[in-house]
Length: 424
Image (cartoon, rainbow, N blue to C red; front, side):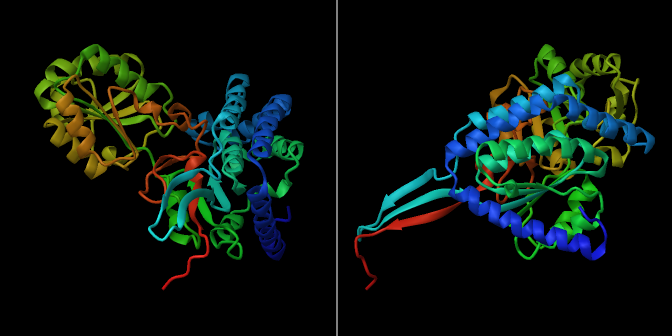
């Protein structure tokens, strides 16, 4: 791709026009064709495994030389196990029901008009993301499944891996008789390409999905000339209610924080009911410290467990993506909900309790995309919801919320069937 000045502008405009043509081809394709393309993608990822891992090794080497942070490197890294997970995730998308054409509702009016609300593709979706190469495969599979064309723009730190994965995507499309224009990859690291995507490419882009850090999402939301499906940071909380079972609390908190610290579903703040803090906090905090987690607590938490540093205001709004956890004592469900409302990002929050009334009060009071009862926040993942995969966790309230899978990448239209009716 020409990455200089007018040449880049022309290339990007051509991508927009090609994507619109790809969207038309997908709209006319059959569910069987889309399934075949996705399955062939998974097979191509496995077949191209050595070249994909070699490309990833090159990206990792460059990332080390450029001083990329440890959480970003962890997100970037692929090995045999992770690459198999990418391929399996694509296969899972092939296995889910095709949403296109699904009848959501149907009714008949007194005048005999038959009205149906039917799922339909959005059109052309641009996905702008950082670091995680699995997004390339997930986004391609989900947009194909939902009948949408895609323009993918990954981060410069992952460009070789993304291009290698895109070759597998193209093989899948070709195997199913679908044009390469259905899923295009921006091959230049030039950030000007992002600005052109945000401009809408002559109104050829119908939806923009950013997946990355706060600065990326803020830029997209500020500059986009097309609708944006927001994905904010995961400022996730686990609240230990006075009715919590200690063993359950230990297991859930350790998993929520430390299973993978670099994912957006990782817990970043632990809230503990003041009424049971002396019982719950010492064991949970010690287990976290023993597992290598740094704790930063408010004064009340430090009074019970002194082996933690003091938290400041910034700690309540920091997505660490590292083995660091903020800790605060709160006054029951009401206090936990107030803290989450003040500092959370509306992503994922959990309560641990055996008190059903407290659990229901938490579910009602906490207005996040995902609210869990007695389960780890690390379940904030489309695959775990049965969606096969997800492009991200939408924290906006429109058009989709929570894990964005194939169904969430559709809109709907009304199909009205008559027998000659005219309006009086």
